[in-house]
Amino acid sequence: MKKESVSLSIFIDALGWEILQSHSFLDDELIHKQDLRTIFGYSATCDPTILTGALPRDHGHFSFYAYDPEHSPFKGSPFIQMMRLVPKALSSRNRVRNIAGRIIRRRLDYTGYFNIYNMPFKLLHMFDYTEKKDLYQKGGINSGIPTITDYARDNNVDFFLADWKAGEEENLGNLKDALGDENRNITFAYLYMASMDAILHQYGKDHPEVDKKMAWYETQIRQLLSKAQEHYKEVRLFIFSDHGMTDVHTDFNLMKLIEQTPLKFGTDYAAVYDSTMARFWFLSDDSEKIIRQVLENVNEGQILSDSTLEKWGVDFPDKRFGDLFFLMNPGVLIVPSHMGERTIAGMHGYSPDDKDSTAAFASNVELDTYPRGLEDLYSLFKQEIDRCMR
Ligand SMILES: [Zn+2]
Image (cartoon, rainbow, N blue to C red; front, side, top):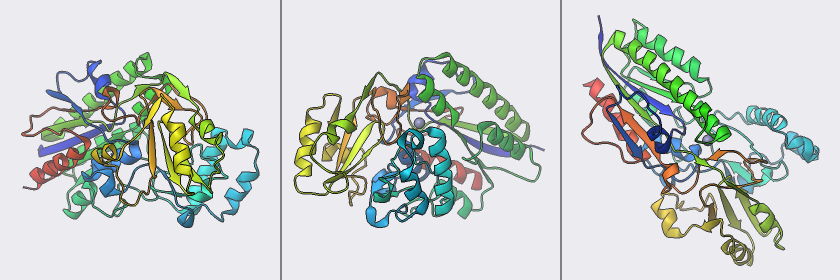
């Protein structure tokens, strides 16, 4: 006998509204498709907002590195000391950094997503890493607020949670098995699909590989739907993303401009060069004036005002993520940065008001209210869980 109702929430990383609009995608199933406002930052910012409904200033997640020498988990590590001695030609290789990252993650016992990216080994001891715990497990959010997975667990709901460390096909297979499992009655499934993001970074928005991936998702989701419909009378489908993707047209060496000043890193200032923004901490009296002067002459980006930071929900009360944020214009990439040594075809993390940054939302059911931004997804998920508990 068929079970009542199941709600499938499918998160396709980086499936922006611009990309969704330019492809046919499950058009016979998805009766509703719309743009969804994103959050300023990267997946490390967006995912906690999706899971909690809170803005970054309230969940405490933004970018992976924050200047905090006192609490740096990297200081005093003999392994990092050793890596500092390795010539840059070797230590900047992706393979070497990936292996080193795995060793550090294991030693620190982190359960969250950990990547040292391109952060120089000689700077690590000044920084804290801000996603130490698995966001999807209890207590995963920095500020301590609960997530939708906590809500499902606390209410003893039979829910399916994809493993973010596993591949897409494995997660799809696991969800299909769970839907077909006689002993389960799933009310809510959360399926995370990561590889669209990687394809868009590698090829940019307009590329046959993107079309191919869209077609693949379409086939996979159709199969998933028919499997669910075999076992449940009603299958409610929601597809959403965290942000879009912007094609990169210009590389900009911001780091060099700052390093040409007389200021000394770690004494006068500290900086994290994320791929689309730079964040500065002022440690000596003159550093703010000098750095502002340099930045004000850069036409490829802009200093974010306090009112913009507040509007975007990234006005952290303790200035944990920087005293000053400098954001590049859409399509301008900081190269090299602490995120990467080389350029890339697509990037996200530009102004959330830019059309290419905009995320997407689609569903096969009508809703009373539709989410307008990422922070609205939490109440949608909660509503879906609640309706199954009734
Ligand atoms: Zn990405």
